[in-house]
Image (cartoon, rainbow, N blue to C red; front, side):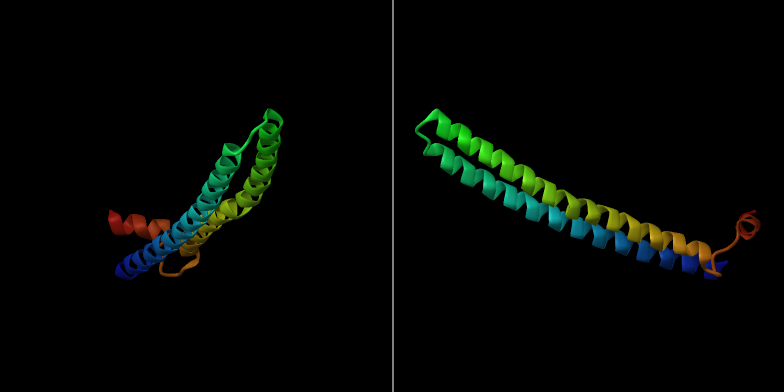
Length: 114
């Protein structure tokens, strides 16, 4: 039983390490995209400050909306992939315990506890 407990502890340690790494990767992507979006908003505000005619305002606003839609569409894929990858690696690590010989069967665990 102690070998199984050690194996379970080791498994959880690796599972949590994978989760932390995935969370860090996801956070880095989100911060990178946030920085790019803030820079684009500041650039747009600077352009709008120099507008003299309503048509120019609408043209700049339309262009900004189109660019931001394209940028956000490109950003959605890596962000979603990072989140799914993090979850997948953590889950894979935890589910590997099912196939390890040191993990006790349900009957063995039940008998050990009672």
